[in-house]
Length: 406
Ligand code: ASP
Ligand code: MG
Image 1 (cartoon, rainbow, N blue to C red):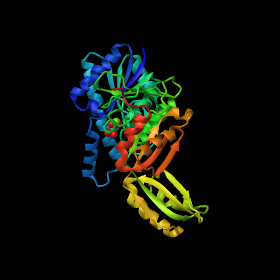
Image 2: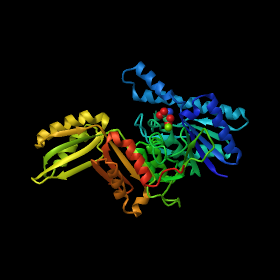
Image 3: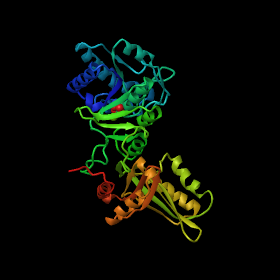
């Protein structure tokens, strides 16, 4: 017997039929002798339409009221599921965030969980209830309803699993696991059996949209195994686990791509102490997040500085950089928003040399020019021309032995 937390996303509870499927799956897990806590999202599209209603009600909706509104989406699905389970003969109860005391800070729309009082949940479980909890919501010290940011019910699921010291947190979604690359552009991508928290953190930040990034950090901190799987079939998905869990280790577990970055270069910047601070302070003050930075030293006491910013902030970053260039006496500002970042990710890199050279040689063979390179302990990223993204992902996927068998 185990304590299983099952979280179902918006597409899994999109209508009554699908909620009935969820009820069946939950009941089955319970019938196998497990304690079950279910976390639900709102029906898919509901949170978006609530936001749109709020925008029609007021130009800049009050944040406290907006969170109280958005939290209603989950109230619908948990009560419907609880009713179904009860009518099927099970003991079940729905629970809102404040009822199980999910305490958060007061950052409306993006609140962080501070603590969860697991007592109430435990009491319900001891009485053999299936507990159905609203994801995405909590309340602050003053009792105001808060929400955890879009996709936040993943974090609710993992946080509740952590508070209860659950054996596993299953995240049911509309994909059947984590893939070695985006299957839409890499037909030979295959589903991973396991992936580490750190790999997942790197993948998520690079665009693999499977879990809310915050939930992975939570899972890592409390060492909660997370099973990402499909709610539409019975197949095993991908286990997100710690590095020392004895999993089979690939050198590279995935190839990701990100077309959402643009590049800015300041040429012939005087090479002096304090220059980087002068260039990047105004950018960060404007709330623009810089990802990769490269500085090349030239001969005559000058340096070129290149960095990437989100495409949406590209124009602003260019304008700011032009002002800065004038102030510091740089030659010119160049920009390029037809770039993409391709990355290979794998904890196995820590113990293997040569990953970078395989990556560079593979790109070179296809005549793909590398404009920037960035590395971390478990990731190597190259900035290339956007039009080569798909090709680069496919050849790297093959080069690192990730292709699915025919
Ligand atoms: N319903 C919320 C959203 O759409 C939370 C979630 O689905 O995870 O963002
Ligand atoms: Mg989601």
